[in-house]
View 1 (cartoon, rainbow, N blue to C red):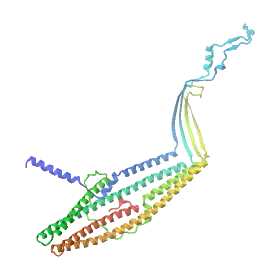
View 2 (view 1 turned 180 degrees about the horizontal axis):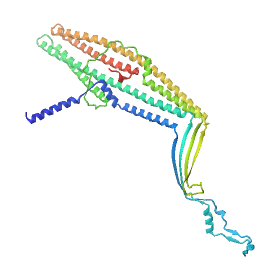
View 3 (view 1 turned 45 degrees about the vertical axis):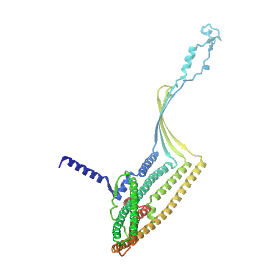
View 4 (view 1 turned 90 degrees about the horizontal axis):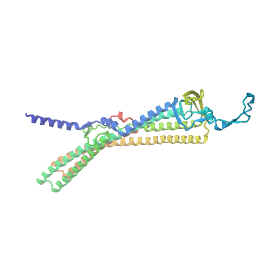
Length: 473
């Protein structure tokens, strides 16, 4: 073998292996995991859950004291002067000094020099052009009317509410993914069915053409078979197009590229459907497990917490205040342009007197709580109706499946007899075409009923609040 041929074989093997590996086969569980990992709404719900966690953490910190460091600098245009210019006279009147041997007539006015006046005034000057202030303060709430406790309860319920909303989103994602998955399986089965039907008609077309040449069949028989063959070919094209679109939507749900080639594990696997009648659902199970009910009940608790916050508006607030303050200039030992500080402790009591506005806010909060309670009751009524509808649809789907199974057996037998009779020349082509159409309809109905049972089970489990991730299809 030449080197060129050897390299060509390696290239072909590599290309073949890349084509084989390009198509992935996914089970329903694999598809669910991909959808959960890549769904944008679930990612947003996870981030909202983180937000609720940190908000709860921030609410808990309200029990603890708050510390702050403050600083202030002021540049003033002028200094203060404690001695006014009018307080210093321009001259002084001398008393009688003759007893001291000073020959100055009494009442003589002696002017005070300006320099001397300025020096006197400078004694009372306070330097405030540069003022520095600094403080470290502490505020500790002692009693806030129950506001902090209520706020922490609200944040705790808000965190659980975020988790419940995420669970609801998860159930919706899985239900949508399951519906898309089984739709592809249904269309794949129908594609195989359409191909089989087309092959039957092609074989019949070949047989009846031979019979026409032998004078056993007419041209009209050949044309009627040809029309059905063209219709079957068009049906196959429609199914293939629908299957391609369904795969694109499925890829989008899984977070894959739309053009990715994905095969599903159940496309070539026989679907096993139980013929046993489904068990009657429990409404109480749904009330306990449905995340929507949990969300509404948590929202009711949040509104009750808001009631407590509004009720706290009627109660006094008590807090402890402590601080250490620095100033420059300071007056602790005369007035000096140096930093000097002192500590201080106090208690702050605030008694509200706005009873009218607080009463209105409390009444509004109570009304919002009642609205939320009505929503819970309404949701329970709708869920009960939804469960009953889902149970009826599942029962109907099971009956339809059992009936379709019997119809398919009869259609298979009818087609077999019609084909044998046609080959023996005792049954006309129109009867064989009718048998083929009945066979196609029965098999198509069988596929639809199987998928319907699968989806009705999904929707009933979702209505009951069961975790779809734990339920194997």
